[in-house]
Structure formats: C-alpha cells, structure tokens
Length: 492
Ligand code: GLU
Image: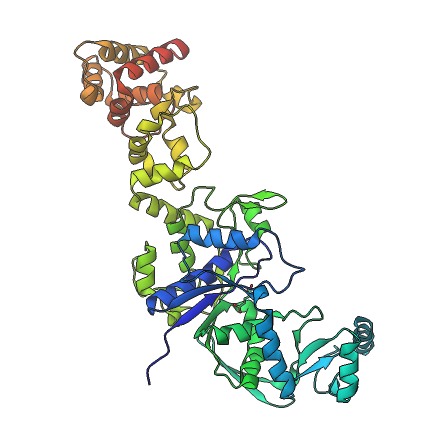
C-alpha cells in the first residue's frame, strides 16, 4: 500500500497577533510538509465571531510571509464553509450521534450551581442527558415545534458512555481515556456556527490532512476529536502535539508581558492594535535567524551544525525528533543566531533591511553598504549596524571619559599634530596612513600603544571600533585631518 501524500495545515484563529508559539507551529508544519514532499495549507479558524480581532488574519498571513513560510494554496476561511458543517452535523443528527439541546443559559447555570453546592462539577453527558431539555428526551414533533418556534438550541455530540478512547501522539506516544468522563461537547452553537472542535475535525478530513501538528494545549481535545472521527467512520490523521514555549525563567507560557519585562518582543512583525507593538523584525532580527532559533524550541536535529538556513531545516526536519519537554525562550540565544545569520547575509541585502528600519539622516547611503561590510562582524541585530557604523559617517560629538584619561598624557598633543600634518601633506596616502603616523611617532619616542589609542579616540571618540586603517581608508584623509583638528581644539 502506498502512503497517502503528506498534507498538513496551520489553523490559526484570528483572535490577535500571531505569537511566536504560533510561528513555531506553522514552521514545524511547513518543514514537515517540505521534508516529505507534501503540502502545507493555512486555514483561518474564524467561527468564533465574538473573539475575532480585526486585522489579525492579515497580520498572520503577513507574518508568515516575512518568515518565509509560504502556503501551497491561498488560505481558506471556516466562516465561508457553514453549509459544509451543516451538512455534516445533519448526518450525525440523523444517525443519533448528535442531538439538539434546548437548555437555556439560565437552566444550565442553575444545574452548575447546584452541583457546585455539593462540591461537584456539572458535566453534561450520559449521566444526565436523558433528563435534560434536549431531543433525546423529547419526541420528534416537540423538537420540530421548538425549532419552528425559533427556540434557541445547540447541537451536542452524544459522547459514548463507556468506551476506551485510544489515542496515539507522535511526540508523546499512546494514551487512553475513558469516554464516560467526557462531556457532550457542543458541535454547533446557538448562532448556527460550528464550534472549533467540530469545524476542525470536518475540515481536517475534507482537506485530506494526514498529520495534525499543533500546540500541546490541544492535547486534551484529542479524545473528542478521535471520537468524532469514529462517529463519521473516518480514519483520523496522525497527531503531533508540540511542547510549550516558556518564559525565560521557565515559569509559565511565554507571554507578551514577560517579553516586555525582559526587553524582547513575542510577535514576528509590528502589530498595529490599540497600542502599537514592535515585532522581531523591527528590532533587527532577520527572519532566517528567528526561524533557525525557534526550530530548536522542541526539536533537535541530528546535525551538530547549529546555524541552518530554511532550506537546510527542510532537509533535516523530522517529527520523531520533537521532544515532549517544554523549552525556555532565550533571547540571548536568538541574538547569537541573528549574529551568525548577519554574517552569512550579503551586504546589499543587509542594506535593504537596514533602510527599512528607522533611518539615520546624516549617513551617506551610497557608502552604507561598504560600511555594513566593515562593521557587521560586531552586530547582533541589523539595527545595531546604524550605531556600529556611526563614526564612519559622523565625526565624534563627544569623547568617552575613560578613553580620554588614557590618551591625555604628555605627547598626546604631538601625536594629534602629526595626524594633522600627515593627513594634510601632498604625499599623504590614505591606504597606509596609520602605519605612517605610527612610524613617525615611534621615531619621536612614543609607544605604539599610546599612538594607536590616540588615533582611535580622535577618529571614533572612544576606544572601540574596527581596524584603524580601515576607518581612515573609509572616511578619507580630509575627514581624518578635520577630526584631528576638532580633537585638538576640544581635548588637548
Ligand atoms: N484554531 C486552533 C488554534 O488557534 C487550531 C488548533 C489546531 O491546530 O487544531 O490554535
């Protein structure tokens, strides 16, 4: 027997911006599809109109696009498939596997409160369903009348009273649940819309989904979903529930609040909700780095190589290597990945990304690509490239206190004067300038250390920065001389 072609889906609900956990789910689905030569689909689960947030669907699609996670088809929307769910619920109703329930909110509340008084929890299921306000205890005529009279109703699943529901999860293995403990879940709500559970199962089946890869929070629904497949007589897909992503301290699910407290985003791109929230993109994280890092949250490749491109991840991914233990989000590690990916990215591409961030006006954009090449070795984020290359475009506005202490020594002034005279001389050569100044000052009796430090502070304003000769070659002799003159005035 040949295996069915792999088909997976990412099924977000448009209830807000896509969290990093959602990106990880989408990524693992995508990688699994690509690794197996299968299909990756996006399904927008928008049947809960009350929870829908405007702009969220678009945000999800845009975020995934930025991450490089592309679906094989246009996303489909559950809200447009109501007729299909109706058709399927009718089938279950006819076969006695689902029933109409007319219990009002008030009735259910009383039942709940009564149980609570006894220290128990009310569960709508086989124990009590034959004495409640539903089509199991009413005759057909009564049911028809109620429906015709527009009485509000929901459709509930008639959960088997005693059956052992066996489930298998690729990450967690076998488990079994006693169906008598489950409740008769609502399949169709009073507004006529299907619930998540119902639409999700019907669609997974109709879309030919072979593997459901989703967050661990859906594990408790697995028994119900399995029973729904059985009720329809369908073969259920394979399941893989991904471990949680926790806050950096390992306490609780990764939250926006924890991100804010620790200074990092939890969303891929800017979210323009009531309050604007920046994403990883805006703080200068490359999508390749984000993807590479989040691929490690719950999955370890056999490969010892850590820095991997999306294409490499597609080759290496396997669901069998997904672990069940949760992973702590580590922003420092993400920055490490970002640093690595910055080194692998072409300068013109980095320039394109950089220019999309908040622009610094006093930079010569024509020369920026070269500057990026010179300083990127030190960058953990793309945005840092602005600051790291500042002295290549702008003269020091001030001089770092500590650095000044180290160069304000006897002879310092003479070194600066040498810079000015050599930079201004007809025969001055930019490409060997630093060596020239060094030799000349050594001849005058200064130490190489003092000379180099002085040149650095004059050009950069501090004791950091790239190779001095590279700075001079970049800014030119005229600018070198002008900075030295400025230092002479301000410092010596
Ligand atoms: N709409 C669900 C969610 O937002 C999908 C869960 C699933 O993949 O089955 O997480």
